[in-house]
Amino acid sequence: MADRRLQVFHTVARLLSFTKAAEVLHMTQPAVTFQVRQLEEHFNTRLFDRTHNRISLTDAGKTVFASADRIFELYSEMENAVREITGEISGALAIGASTTIAEYMLPTLLGDFKERYPDVTIHLKVSNSDGIVSMVENNAIDLGVVEAPVGNKNLVVEHCKRDQLFAIVPPGHPLAGSEMVTFEQLLEYPFICREEGSGTREVINDYLNLQHDCHSVLKVSMELGSPEAVKGAVEAGMGVSVVSGATIQKELKLGTLVALNLDPPLNRPFSFVHQKQKFRLRVMEELLEFARAYCREHDD
Image 1 (cartoon, one colour):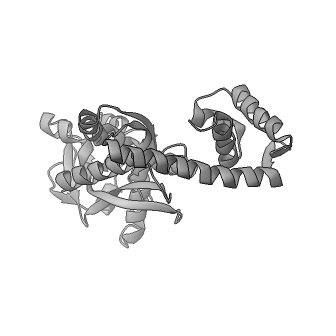
Image 2 (image 1 turned 120 degrees about the vertical axis):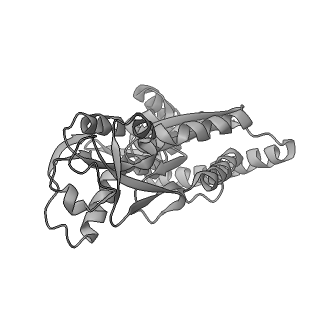
Image 3 (image 1 turned 90 degrees about the vertical axis):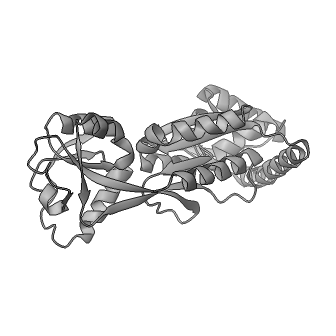
């Protein structure tokens, strides 16, 4: 219902990028530029200054942007008020999740949510934790679920579930008969890591910084982009690793990997992260509450 030109302008102004706005809006960049020019023609003034491949808001643009914020907030409030009366839960949500969560936690959660609310459309984007936080910061997604601490104090971060990490080795490895290992013992072997920006990589680094006995550096033999790749490399005898317990249930049943408790234990929270919006769509509130209940039920 809201003016499409204003929606496109608001996205460009928020991101200060025509390219990023086109990605978020699933439009071509020329189409985004056309909508903004249409709005500038309507007001008969420039809304952006374009210099050196960068854009900034003009004084008129700042005024339109501030007004657009209020307009879209009132629009959301109107939609929610009507849906409260009708009892309807519908709409579209964009969710982002780090790789481990997207592969091992969200399929069941979102499947159950869709079964209860079939009129809700959910778009899922997968990245590492740094990428998901960046999407939330840029309003490219409504809600992120990440596996590492979030440094941006302007975002709302809500812990939803505790995740325990384990050392993994192939059967027959010298450590395979141990029930518990220290990280200092793991450092004696080639270590297979997730990539920089991964939540798992970050919590391992933080853990190591707290271990006074770990004077050696990690002997990183490989950096891989997914839990499946890490598990496959360990199974092949290429090194050891530390992964989420949620990712290795199948391998433990098949006997292709051996999981070892870490001493001291390594736990981390899975967390919801979103903008500090004054007003959210009811479908967002419903998803958050549904996810909180799911996490309470499945927490260790």
